[in-house]
Length: 309
Ligand SMILES: Cc1cc2nc3c(=O)[nH]c(=O)nc-3n(C[C@H](O)[C@H](O)[C@H](O)COP(=O)(O)OP(=O)(O)OC[C@H]3O[C@@H](n4cnc5c(N)ncnc54)[C@H](O)[C@@H]3O)c2cc1C
Image (cartoon, rainbow, N blue to C red; front, side, top):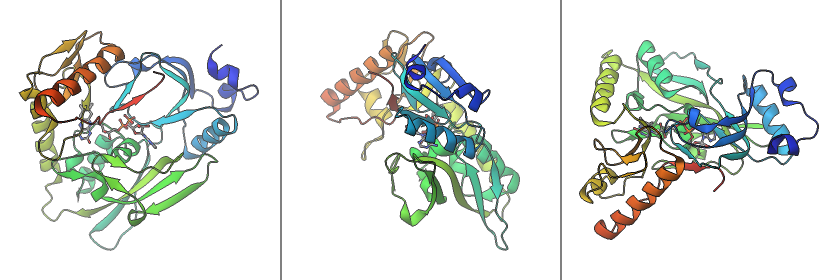
């Protein structure tokens, strides 16, 4: 019996949400870095309604939970997660709202993958989202992280975000009621992102696909995609990219266990095969100490660390 079973005397999760509940699931099978211990309970809602039911039940029983999307910006600790993780992967509906003009609102549920949304914009010839090409996250994770590249961030194309509170109540906030900053969205305490609307425009030149293909090719050259990784580990300081500071501190190729600073891109840590979260976190601390000592910059984490310490 795991911690979750002990805490919930009553609801039968598997009966309530058939096929959507996994106990003692190894996080390493899900995180893009391939590391992390056991998750007590992993839930996959099939619909926003399911998600509401799960969140209500968890809140009512005082069970801690967190929501994840594509697991591409997460390091889950070796001790794993107590309580529940809810993965939005199956909340994957995309709709385009009718419009008389060239401006189009696209509505996507939190679990829609950014690559799928980019592919949608290519099919529909909508411009404004090309910079997200190659970012492997989800809509919910992308908004939470204010993901971006090439000088653009997802907040530039967001028109509204729908949030759910711990009682399952939903509320849509327009962009002027939301606070974004570099690689961060001020998610109100206890809320979950369930859907977002993006304001895009028809491309008169019909070259969305060409631009997306070019970006994906450039990223393939720059990023160590042959290894498991979690994207950029540190936020870029204002004056210089984190990757350059790490490279100048001589850390490319430096490893602790199987966690290594990529030889291709200083701001990526790669899993050469059997890295643990402990290896990755030790390497993160070591890089921060060396860059502070040698370059005078205190690198701030971009990836989120989740789980028991
Ligand atoms: C190869 C590679 C390349 C990458 N390139 C880039 C890049 O160019 N630019 C960039 O910005 N990022 C990049 N990333 C990082 C990552 O893909 C983005 O940050 C992405 O937006 C994270 O989305 P996710 O669904 O994977 O989030 P997750 O890793 O699942 O979660 C990240 C955080 O968001 C929270 N969260 C997720 N969903 C929700 C929700 N529905 N409601 C509330 N909170 C939620 C989680 O609790 C967690 O705190 C890259 C990653 C990889 C592996």
